[in-house]
Structures are given as C-alpha cells and as structure tokens.
Length: 411
Length: 227
Image 1: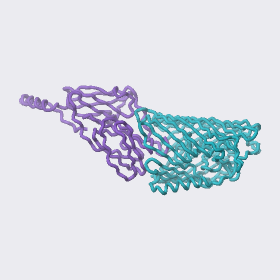
Image 2: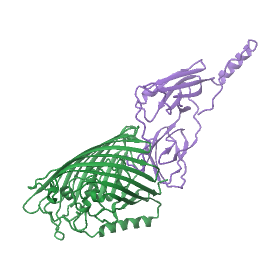
Image 3: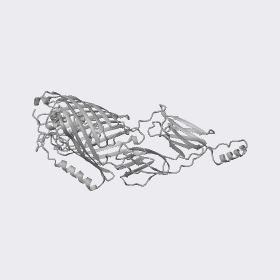
Image 4: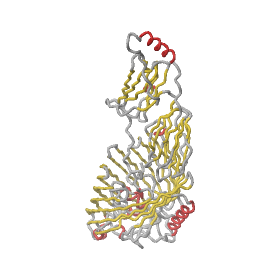
C-alpha cells in the first residue's frame, strides 16, 4: 500500500507564536521565576534498524548508523507564578537527530490553581501539555527517572499525544481530612490532534525518549508525520479518574478520543484525519525502602476513512517496571509488550513485539547524572519486508548518558 | 510544657514530725502536692512510639490554662520544619520561608482556616490559633508538603520521646489522657484513658496500640518528581 497523503510540511508559526507569547508574559510580570537548563550527551552503541527520525522502521531512537556520540537533549524550562493563583510553565528542547528538528516547545501552559476549600481542590490548565496518563514520566521535562528510553506506551504518548487545549481537575483531598486516600477527576478538551495515530500505523510502537515538539514533525523534513494538526473542526476529549493511597499508591484510568472525522482530508495539504481513541490504566506502588513498581496498560484503535474504504489499526501495549533506589543509585528493569493489528488487506502496519530494558542511573549531585541503559527490542513488522528487510528483527541499543543541569532550584 | 515541680514529701525525723504534719496539712490545703505522670505508648509489635502527642486534663478541678507561646514553622527544602507542633490555645505561629522557591500554605481544617502565600524573603505576620483542635497544613504549589499543628487547651501536654514516653509532674487527682499521632488508625475514643494520680510519687500508664501506624511519608523522593 502506498504511503497515505498525511505527511506534509507545516510552517511552525503557531509554535513560535505560542513560545513568544509565553516568554513575553513571563517577562512582563517580573515575578521571580524558577528556571532550569540541562544538557544530556550520549555515547551510543546500536545494531538497530534505521531510526524513525531518519525515515526508517527501527524501534529504538538510535540505529546502527548512529553509534557514537549523540546529543540526548538540551533543555530549557521556566516556571513562574503570575499573581497568587496563576502560574506559567514553558519547556523547550533541542535535539540533534537525523530529523534535523530545530528547537521545539514540548509543553507551554498556564495553570489556574486556587487554594483548596473544604477538602476539595480545583485546577485548570490551558495551553499545550501532557494528559495525565504516564506514571513513568514523572521527572522534570516529562522524563523518566527510571531509564533513558520510555516504555512503548509512553514513547507513543511523547510522539503523538499532547493536549493542546484545556484540562480541568477536581480532587477530593482525603489525606488532608483524616482519611488515608485521595480521589481525583480529570477532563480535557483539545484541538490540533488529527494527525495522532499515523506514526503508530506506520512505524508501530517504539521505545525512545524523543518527544515531538508542539506542532512539530516526526521524522525527516519533507517526509515526516505531523501529529498536531486541525482541519476537521472537531475537538477531542478525555476523561479520567485517579485514586491515591497516602503517597504510596496511584491508580489512574483514562478514556481518550480525539473525535477526528476520519473522512476529512485537508484540501490544502492533502492530509487525512486520523480518528484515535483509547483506554489507558496505570498503577504505581512505592515503598519506603526505595522500591517502585509501575504497571501501565493501553488499548485502542486509530482509523481513517478515505473515500470508499475504512482502514483500522487496533493497538494495545502493556509494561511492568520494577525499580529500586539505593541512595544516589537507581536500578530499574522493565518489560514491554506491544501489538498493532490492521484490517488493511496487505497487512501494512501490522506489528507485534516485546522489549527488555535495564538501566542504572547515578545522581552524583544536584547537577550531574550518569546513566547506563541496555535495551533489547524483538519485533515483527510487516512494513520491513517492503524495504527488503526481514520482518522479524532483534534490535539492541546500549547508551551511556552524562547530563549536567543547573537552575534556580538546583543547589 | 510546665517546669518540673518538686514532689512534696513529709520531712524526715521523729522530732520534726508534728511540725511536718502541720506544714504538710497547710500545703495540702494551699495546693495539691505533685506526682510524676509517665505515659508510654507502644505499637502493636511492642516498639516504643516516639513523637506522639499526649495531653492530660484534670477531671476534678479545671486546670490552669497553659500560657500561649510564639512558635515557628519554617519551610526548608520543600518541607515544613518541624512537621508537627503542639501549641496552647491563643498561641501564634510564624511561617518563614527559608527556601529559594515560593510556597502557598493553607489549611481548610475547621479549627483554623487560612491561606498564606510565602514568597522568598518576604516576612508575614504570625498566625494566631484561638481554637483547640488539629490543623492540617499543605502547600498549594508542592502537593506532597504536609504538616500538623495540634492546638490544645489541656494544662499538660507534650510529645513522647525516643523511648516512647512522656513525663510530667502533675497535681494528684483524676485525669483524662488523650493521645494523637497523624498516622494512628484508632478512633479518638480508643486513644483516651482515665487514670488517677494517687498517693504514690509516680503514676504510670502504658498505652498499647491495637493497630499499626500508617506508613510514614516517603522522604527521599526527589522533590521535582510528581508524586
């Protein structure tokens, strides 16, 4: 099946404007802001197929041609309060992968945060940010404190899913009123989502840490996918519940539907709208002795309906992560399973696989972090045969990372 | 906490006995002689419980209200320091911010509702606490920050030490002793005891908790993580 006409270039005007507006807002208020700068460099050894950033079907961030020294991520983040009840957050990053992506904004939002009342807390977010799904990406910059590469589920969220819109959250703070648990409800409405699903249907699941900038491109210039587009006039929605037991256990369930009209084709670019919907659930358990266990589950489908056909790619993935902190050392192991099915007659996009990740992170001090990660992905992808490669591949990537961070809160 | 009072004893020596009896009688009429009250708390596995709040109220006569104090609860490394204070009714608490980041502390406890934005380097007037009860404190910016203020009208109060004991010199008489700890699972009624401080110099009570404490908050988790 030929590649569908969903990949085209989008001028990054919107992205730049959003960044500029946020920065201006921060400057105008004159409030003291918390900022952070970090630089993450990698020494990579990989035997994986050509990276998705290079237009390939490799399941890891770096392919065999990328072995050597690489820029992991250069990041700048700013958080400031705007008066008592509002705050602004801005997160920009630069990478140096084959896609030659310039500096991109991964998150930029305003948050309204009134004081809790009578045991209830309400919060409102507006801008571009991650919906509350991942229990793994809990560190600054939506990074994982357990490994360099994210799980298959959260890698996909980083590539194609972002709320560009509004999110409201209402929490009942039981732990502040003599109980041992809290409960929360979240609801979001968003636009610029019609491209979400195309990378899953094309490349399938991957395990890496390349977050797509808001309004950014996935893959090489001219051929990359654009997840953040709006041309069908319909907003997407999600709703979720969260339960917490003290500060030990978090349980999250969320339903997501971008409500894209799969028959819509952008008359200017020829891009097609991808209707993507999924259910997700996650459980994180932490102990006082430094143990963390995370389970996440994702089940959904993405579909398009160009004239005369309806093409569907149901997908599901799960992972289990176990981690232990020993002082400044963190040892983690994760097992991922993932699968994309399809009703496309020649099976294009069909993928099944699993992955093992082992990582050691050492936080030398507030500034320096050293990380070593071994990742092995074994996957079967029908698309590979179209590039005269075997459908079944075992890919191994070894990364050594050194990160230096400094900022107003790091001493 | 009251300063330790001397235990009144009959003076030794037969020749002084009549005089001593007179002094003792006069003393008894003026004020009831004190004895040492020791409250010990043990968890279900037999370990001493340190840091629990103990209050003692006389049942026979209203005790003297404790004098208000001026206490300080600082913000250090994105945590309340200390994370529990016991203060008499009418006391004031100052909330400075030693962190480089801002905090917004709040309480919606019925005992005292307040909110206080703490920007770095900007002092705020102390907060008065005029009603007895437990005040739960949080920070609207850092969701994992948690602290407690126990405001009490009991004449005798304090916290158990490392050996799980609280010691006070109190006048003889009947008392209601109450115990509180943020992580205890027992009901308030289960944690109240009545006892008589009688003729002996020392009255002791050991409270065995029926339920184990809730797990303590995780403290070594980096503050930058969501929790």
